[in-house]
Amino acid sequence: MSTATLTIDLDAIAANWRALDRLSDPSTQTAAVVKADAYGLGVGRVARALARAGARRFFVAVAEEGAALREALGPGPQVCVLAGHMAGDSDMIGDLDLTPMLNSLDQMTRHLEALPGHPFGIQLDTGMNRLGMEPDEWAAVAAIALEAGPELLMSHLACADEPDHPLNAQQLATFHALTDGTGVPRSLAATGGILLGPEYHFDLTRPGIGLYGGQPFAQAQPAVRLSLPVIQTRMVEPGEAVGYGCTWVAERPSVIATVSGGYADGLLRSLSGKAVFWAEDVPCPVAGRVSMDLISVDVTHLVELPHSLDLICPAQGVDDLARLAGTIGYEMLTGLGPRYSRRYTGGAA
Image (cartoon, rainbow, N blue to C red; front, side):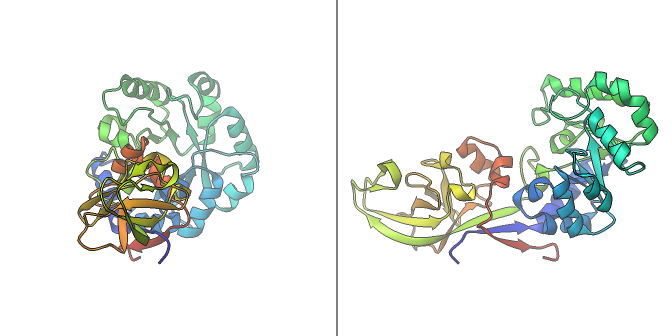
């Protein structure tokens, strides 16, 4: 095979959901965030595995993602849209039974006029200054909104992956101030919020990155492996350079393997000269720059030349790779491109 293989372990994703469900307060429902095509891993297969594990409510970013998820799951599970009810979404929301999380007075007006009686939730801004009604706006519309019967009041923590950050407690206090006494189910915690403790759990938690093996859920099972096929190997003599810009020069007779993959596949150019591939448990450093479709790897020290090399594997998780690239696991996962051959294991794959 000439393209890289991204292997997705559906059993690991389901196990991570169950583990986060156990960490949530026993009275709390655990949902699943599957936006961005389940963080790049394929929303259909992933969501069905999560539904078999017990997830009954899912969150996506926009209505179009909700349509793809509804097609995968069929009727039954609740599909919540974090972007709310955008102009032009009414038919999709109504026909596919999507639940928008309304973020503003404009969205609330649009939803109540276009789809009276249709389920909705409300997102409140408690300090992240991204999505949601601000406290003053909420105070002005709360009576009308609550009379219309929202199914959920939610907010989002900005610094949950930093347990000691003062904004966590500030957002928690603000959320209480805005929602106490409403009688409406509430949600504040994603993966990081779950780990902050039961006071952040409320009625619903929404794990995302932790399902896919990412930080800050350190106990997560690895869910992905990325293997790149070797297209060609060559001998390079001392003093010869490899790749664009001649940034890597051989100091000894070297064997260089060229693998299929590059920044067009989400393998960031910032990994140049930093990334390490793995031949089982043996590290093999990148030689020179990451280019669009190809990466050169120094395999001089291997006893046998490999047919493929791993970039994400048990020896190097997605967050390890992200640190080398100067980014976060979220970006690495969601950036993995469409050219990979996706292979699913477990979960009745």
